[in-house]
Length: 129
Image (cartoon, rainbow, N blue to C red; front, side, top):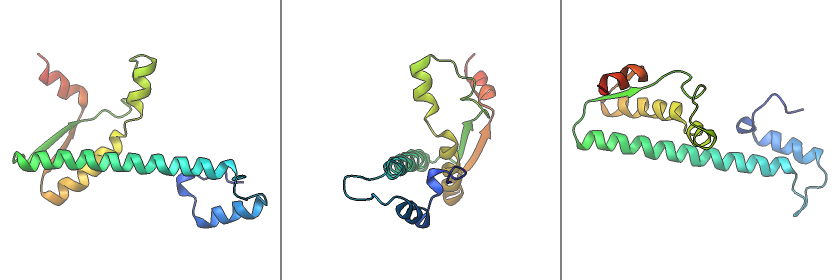
């Protein structure tokens, strides 16, 4: 019924349809879909907040230190081939680096900072002798 839509895209009408389809929506009998959607929304809000704070911190540091160029190393699909062990992979893959870069693009444009995105492997090789 709702299999083709993701949780973040559901609007009020989808909730109303679910309520009509589930007649047992009383206080303690909340359908599991509502709980899952609430958890998903909370996680998305927390991630958006963390990305905004991290990007804002980076931009504030650039402004305080009068940095006009920001260089970020980025490899497309860098998380797919990571093999750092089971637990470290779980912690690493959750970090939304794509969202962070998109937010940095917006803020750099707003504050007049030049953002350059390079291949991460080239950037790391130039730093390490």
